[in-house]
Length: 148
Image (cartoon, rainbow, N blue to C red; front, side, top):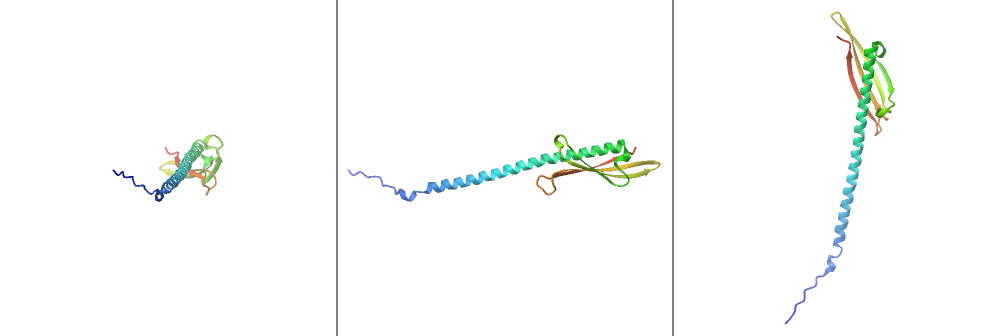
């Protein structure tokens, strides 16, 4: 009886194939990791600027409220016949560092025998240097009147 030996497979031709697949996998995973780090950084910057935008809006709203209080309690101090502009910097809390500029324009009107005034208040709050990455600004406009 003859016994047949299994044929030997020439393994020399298959050498190195695993290393090519492993290098490809490492490169793909490194690129994916770099992409995820970039996306994460962009997301953090977006969230940070969103919070700063909300703070700027609240600072501008504070300017509107300040101007409204002045035109209601002391009408002649905030607005004249000519447009006036008042600026101040907030120094406390989450709004620290915001510069608020409040502009007021007064127009007077008469209906029948009634005279009344209309005040147009424009409040702009900003922080940072214009043109820089951390610059944020918001503007709000409000109309206040003493009409009956």
